Image (spheres, rainbow, N blue to C red):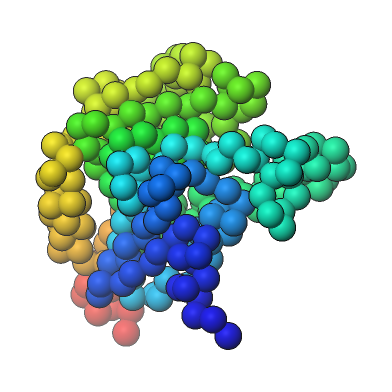
Length: 263
């Protein structure tokens, strides 16, 4: 049976492990890491096969662009070899179409797991599905040539790969709406100003900056990081009283663990 990593790379995803860090790379630079259902399945599998020792997952795109979005073959009658075309999906039942899109979305959801901190290292174009993949991560470290754009609405579609919620959370409803319906580029200075990017650095410093961030994350105790990520994610949705209760419960677990009271 072929090695899982070989199969993933065939579909445009390379996974390498370095201790507690997983490096997940979109590795089709000739096509600017354009996305397809096969790549989405590979990304889903990448998340599934990560060993439990991994604490940080870093997502990159090889070449000049992070990801230029959906491969345009998706909009042709032929579609991708061995795959139902989008035209075929549109002609199917509502349940079949919903199930297909839900499967695609799995490639974008596991990055939010509380047992991982995920970092997107973004350079060049991050368009449509590429933008949404960057939004799937907890943090975005961007090169100064980054260009985000959400082009789905301009094509008569909507962003459906889980990107709408994090976009609104990061930049607010009005700006998110304007970015989506105009399809315009958001470049580096605006990205860091409005919260899309945690930091913007010269392209030559991107890898070093990501490495420094990863080292800082790993310097904190793992269980404290997991609890903190869970609290911050729930803060976006929970009422204030429920959030205070969650903080108390999490701190209780941490204190009992640190003091050995749980033994």
